[in-house]
Amino acid sequence: MDTIASLFSFITTPVSWVIVQFHSVYGKIFGPDTGWAWGLSIVSLVILIRICLIPLFVKQIKATRAMQTLQPEMKKIQERYKNDKQRQSEEMMKLYKESGTNPLSSCLPILAQSPFFFALYHVLNGIATGTTIGVINESLLASARKAHIFGAPLAAKFTDGQSKVEALGASLTDVRVVTAIMIVMMSASQFYTQRQLMTKNVDTTVKTPFMQQQKMLMYVFPVMFAVFGINFPVGVLVYWLTTNVWTMGQQMYVIRNNPTPGSKAQAAYLERLQKHVTHHEKTRSRGEKAIVKAIVAKGRDRNEFERKFINSLTKVGLVAQADGTVVKGQAEAAVEGEDGTTTTAGGAPKRQQPKRQSKSQRQSGTAAGGAKAAGEPEPKTSLTKSDEPQDAKTAAKPAGGGNKPGTGTRSKAQSGQRKGPQRPKSPSKK
Image 1 (cartoon, rainbow, N blue to C red):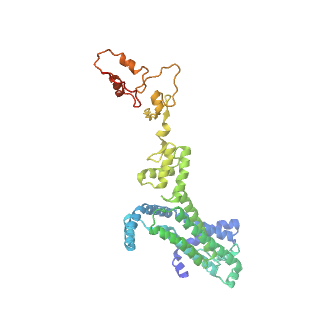
Image 2 (image 1 turned 120 degrees about the vertical axis):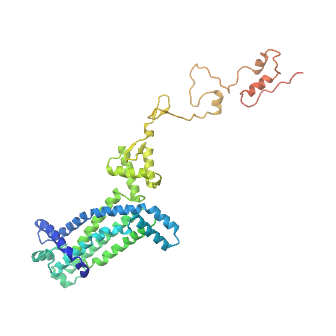
Image 3 (image 1 turned 90 degrees about the vertical axis):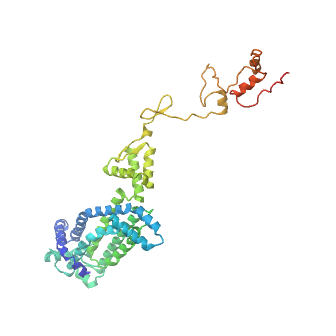
């Protein structure tokens, strides 16, 4: 490990200088020889490094989003070459090359801070062996050797023997208890961070080698931290635990506010966004407008959660626009007039289906549910039978009119009377 760390010796001087600057500030508050002063100096170093890596983290997020856009193409390749794993891998690599994406982009922050990690290890190892390194002189070296974090010296390791630990002014039990707790916390935070990514922020509808890789890292990284952690000094454990907590919080923020399309995190985010937009009847922030604009632009390519979001807005009379804004739809602007007709904002009457009448209503000529006005004569319809007897109507006709007896009744029956039992015809007289 010392050989590997020595390869990064070119950065040990800047790292030691940053630690000394922070120590000079915290030493005035907690005392120069306390574990708080040196421990907080290491924590501040981590925060400074992670702030500098934010642009790289943003690039990592964009690369991950680019990988997500390739999920449909990956699914097609899987289905086409499901019986030929070698050809499937070749087509996947060809797709990565053509789109300019890299499935290993999620490891960029870890690779970028590796030099700082090994440089800090080299600095702390020099403190443990009593060797000055970088800008840490003899007085600072003596101060760092006196610093204890919860009873464990800054440069002590889990594998150190009794004599070495006593030389640093501590007991072997305190060192092993503190280092064991920190190793467990470091491994647990790494596992939770990776598990949160796999369970909440991954499109589970498509199985890709990228997902298999992330799932493998979820179990491999915690084991690696547990194995190598017993050889890390307490100061390095503080560094790595702090960077794991930072990564976990940073990822939680990204998952909550910028989730991967098709993931469970997106479903939860769109549900919160739908309630917020429904309450205010508009999108208020630039981020909300960007999300709505992206969903509208997808059109028929929306996933299940995005379609549910659009339908939820439609049900309450809101319509998402192409620019990301939300306005009231036609359903909200519809107004019912005094005559019972429904008109929209443009003033055009809304067509209504007539109500179906029963048989008795059709025969009586009254509308369903309507009330007859007092004293109003009953309108006659083509279905209303005449009160005048048929014989009287026939007898009223002048003789020799050219019609045979009984033809008047037949003509009326053919001209619109309802079918049903008719009066029997009288026998004709010859």
